[in-house]
Length: 433
Image (cartoon, rainbow, N blue to C red; front, side):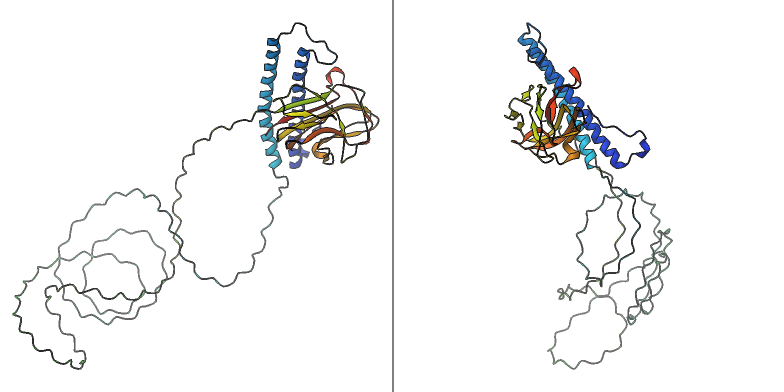
């Protein structure tokens, strides 16, 4: 039979060529498998005495026929497993991109957009990251002596707030120095630019508490006079001794809410957590029951003619080999085959003819399909010969599949290869998905 030929020089193979060669290798393997399956069918025909031109053995028992049938079923189960692997291989090749070029140069930056839109609402707070390992506690230093409490100075006039300087880069934490002595409180000046934090001085020694004086007698309450005019604020007198704590007054009214400050800069991203453990492996899928059918004609000398590229003349395959399961296919009166179970099928077609000119054939569905030449069309050379094709088709229940002559012809069925060439016309269907 005619088979594809691969290039001799691998350096001339493009990515498209490589993908086409992978698909071709799958088709070649399927053609070989179809011959093996056909041989298994002829083995059963030989035992049953129905193989054309060959007399079967005598005295064959039912047990021997069942043993041969079990052998054929075992091979078909292995073939079905191989079909799944070939289907995955074919899908990977068909899904591979074929037009992969180099990365183009970066284009110019587009114009800036319009004015900045209003600030959106804060997003939801993300989940808290895991707590880091706590560091070791440092050694606690000895408490310094408590110094005497200084005299509280007068409160100075509060100056206006100075402008806030830009936030500096956060430096590494320095070593905490010894506490410095607390100086006297000066007049509060204007708020300056916030400088770097100075070292904290040591805490002074706490002085002894003075004795609390006795409370004087409370005089009688006089008549409440009229409210006088509010006098000018007198000079602030010296701070008197601290009296006893008075009763807590009622809470004052809540002041208005201040304006919302600008959003602070976004903090650095937290450390990415460790990758989680792999989930459990899912259950193994169930392989569908195999559906297989092989249909042939063993008659030579049949003449076909008048085909076109769109509608081929049906080349009959009326004789079925054993099918799995029974009733999966129906042989029609014109020798075409009706598929009774929907699915994705690997379909092979084979012809062996004599002819004057180069002739074309196709695996066609419902009488059409030969016009997709790269997918399901094949040919024989001038003078005739054997030729085959393998193709994947999605078929519905009720679709009619046949091998059609898609050229004018005429062609005559023959066995040009002798006893090893197979039947003149053969059609094989194997469901793979």
